[in-house]
Image (tube, rainbow, N blue to C red):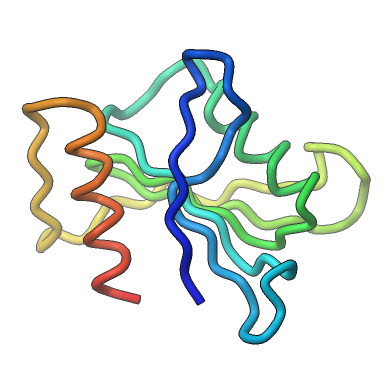
Length: 120
């Protein structure tokens, strides 16, 4: 089951991933979270927020998707801290993903989210 959620980190609202995948019949069991971003790079704060969310919600897998790369995060359950979540990647996005890097942040993030949902 897929859910789309929007949050606004800049305004001080808590982090909410763009896509949350839960176990069928168990909406409290999160299997995967996905965060999409308009730009590559950054200061690492998005990665840290994704890891904290995964840790708090006991989510085993997370994705951070930008217009050019996908990073996979996996909780190893070796510690009860962000250190237990390992990053794999970044991997280049498939060449058939056409993402506009123009308009607004929310539009581009919606395009990435739609592309992920279409492939799911």
